[in-house]
Image (cartoon, rainbow, N blue to C red; front, side, top):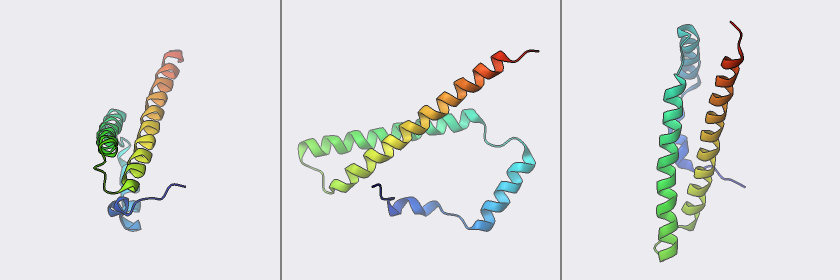
Length: 103
């Protein structure tokens, strides 16, 4: 069972601001560029991997203070890898679909 860490709750926004953000995004028609979203996912993956590698090293040397942090960071890394793979897969799928379009 995965327990969400309390540190992840800092970014919560009130519902009103989310609704206004959704309407402004719908009005602009552009949204977030896929390239920016993919770059952000890769950067997050890299950051989480660095943290997990450091935790693993600390565990091997006996310097880890809280074992639960290693478990949390490992789960975060797994989620980041899955998200990055899904984004890349969807990009390839969209590219193939565009190639199959007839003009």
